[in-house]
Length: 270
Image 1 (cartoon, one colour):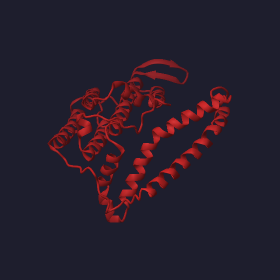
Image 2 (tube, one colour):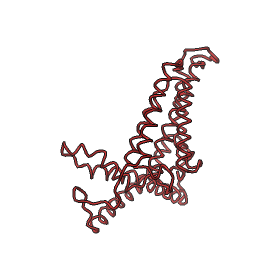
Image 3 (cartoon, one colour):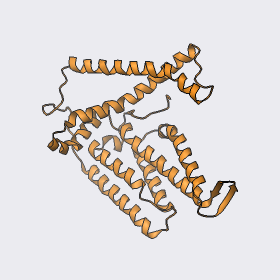
Image 4 (spheres, one colour):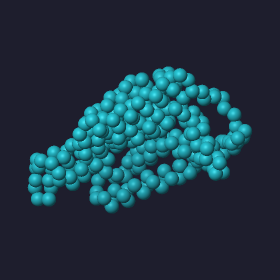
């Protein structure tokens, strides 16, 4: 569990770190949407190449990117297996009873697996290159139009950012509780499904207690520091869009348009 890096921020001075957080957030969501545009291998290859280029610009360790992908490997395997065994189109490669593996199933499974990996790796770049405070300010600015319907945008952005920031803390706390229970003789790995579920109770209960305690401590600390969010709150760092930000917007829009155009040029594999 210590390999899960979701919600962590890694300081740096790369192009992605210096980019306006509002632009970064919008462009990453646009890339996530663009990953679902390709219907052929050429478009998907372009999406992968673009992601590799952005990772190089971020100057993040490759090992860190693999850590973000590691937790979703079971999801990728399950999704791939479902597509392999449930798609019957194409040339049959193997058949045994109701189990049938075809070329179409393998192609679709590989295509969707690469999509999921690009989705997770691309979205993880947002938290890796943006500090929680900056992320809160950017999210508040982007949601500011919702103030028209009397929605407290600042509190919403703060809650979302704190929840994201607490993920690594909860993961670390869970690992400590599991180690403590194993040291007391708890068996968390053997037995049937129901036995394993019951074995998680000594972990879940202390984790909930610890989480509520941390939440109360955080609320008390914010009140003691006279924290008051809202209209009168000032910011130490003002966000300003620069020329590279505008260029990045044009590049990502051209990238999305290119993926859409490739669907009309090359044959779909799905």
